[in-house]
Length: 102
Image 1: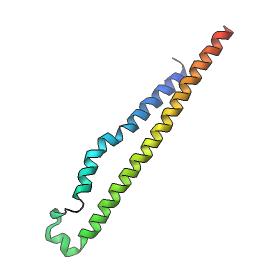
Image 2 (image 1 turned 180 degrees about the vertical axis):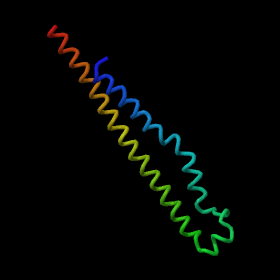
Image 3 (image 1 turned 30 degrees about the vertical axis):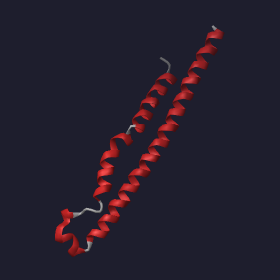
Image 4 (image 1 turned 120 degrees about the horizontal axis):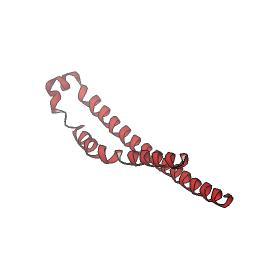
């Protein structure tokens, strides 16, 4: 197996892994987002400290950041996949060029 083929295979695996992140985070993120307005666990302490609003804002921010990370990872996976495909094509072209020489 050529070095380009090895690199392409490795990049393809990496892209597949990045694409799968959203599948693993979707349910926990949905549960986390649903709980941002239900902060009963804080009890009286939360309302006494006036922290509930700040905690809700923080949880909302974390949810948004997680979604942005997933979008970034998806874009990165697409790019890595395209580079992997280019390496595969280059490997085929180099093999064909060597075949014509030999």
